[in-house]
Length: 215
Image (tube, rainbow, N blue to C red; front, side, top):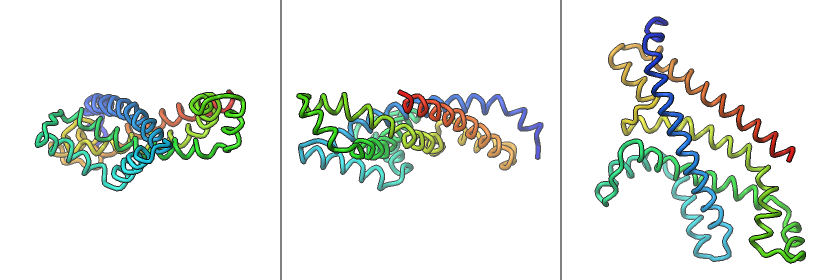
């Protein structure tokens, strides 16, 4: 194994890792927003909103994320959507992640005993007050770990944006393989950096989970 080469290109991989981190954070924020909206739609009293929410989850969970990225980045200009590669990566992966987060959030909310909602309504709280003050605080405790799993998957899925030339870890590894012919070393270096990012995020999720369980 050419460790000297790995040390030589390491700074460039660190720059790519920063791009991966930025991509992950922005995608996670968009995913949470889409997930919250999707959950609200799926739990709505309006049949049309429930249909929209179900269709969103079905389409984006039922088709490959890579195909969704290609449609957005390469097909978008045909319908007037002009995005650079990074923007397309954030939006494409964020909307895709939101579909998974929708089901995570919805599952946590519907797992709360219905009697608590009925008791809140009996005390004079409106439907939304009962949801905000009684149901969501309890559901939040159940969401943290599953959302952490979603986030873990999201970070690894950022490798897909290499296909649309976003200069993140996977793309950087592929680029250096072309000039060094050292695939083992390049992918090993990228894999180590992915593992570090995911481990740090995992520790953060575990800390947050402990905090919400205490409160």
